[in-house]
Amino acid sequence: MGKVNGPWIPCCEKKQFHEMLLWFNNIVLPHVDTTGNDFWYSIVFGTLLGSERGGDMIDWDTDMDVVVPNEKISWLENLLAEAAAKEVLPYHVHLDRFHVPHAPTDIHVLRLSLSKTNSGHMDIWGTDASQPCVQIGSHISENYGPFPLEWCTLGNAKFPCFAHKQQFLKAWYGDAWHKDGTNKFPSARLALPAECSEALAEAMKFEAAMTIETKNEAAEGRAERAERTPYSVSSSEAQNLRTNQGLVLAFEFHRERLGRD
Image 1 (tube, helix red, strand yellow):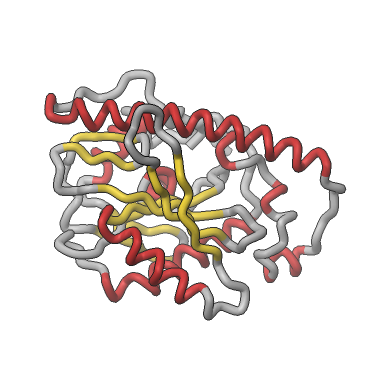
Image 2: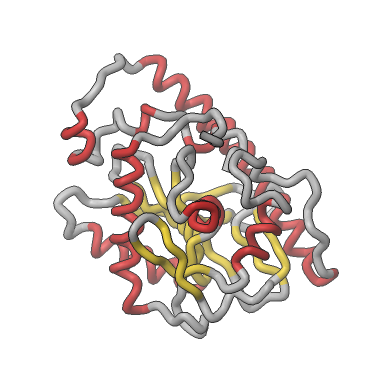
């Protein structure tokens, strides 16, 4: 059917990701300024890629990604934690830290997980969209102008996304970004303006740190799965209980995707 081989995400888990993004959107939407002058957010990376390719989450993607202003991370953490605590099955909000060699501080990524026991999650990255180059995690691109925000379809809903989004996708994934199964890390990066050199150096250090973190987490995940007694759940249980850790074991750990976004 034109798809590549890969660890397909279970439909029930995909539904839960959609519900989590909708929940997040409903919480923050009253605060969103589409002109970028105050709080804003945009879907990015594989989440935006899926929207542009087919209007839905990529079948083998196992997390979601959004970006917000750097200075709003702490405010957002408190807002989401307060809202999550009111849920019957609360989402889990926490900060992840990535150690970057030779950097003065660790890099923080706000993570919204399906629960404390289900590691399916949405990464909430911070950036400074006023700079000539936009750095989001290990990805850096020329600032093509993210504002005013547009609205992108994902599933049966629309979410904020960058203006000139296809230029950002090309910078992140290369010329073939629109084709299924292309490598998420292009062999040749797009040329960047000279003023981006410092940001590029920081992004490369962060990418190296994430690679080490990925290998460690993948090894731990394999060991944990080897020790666990396999079991299954009914489709009704899978639909209703996002705390069931068996769901996330139905597909490979999200950082073992081998760049198949």
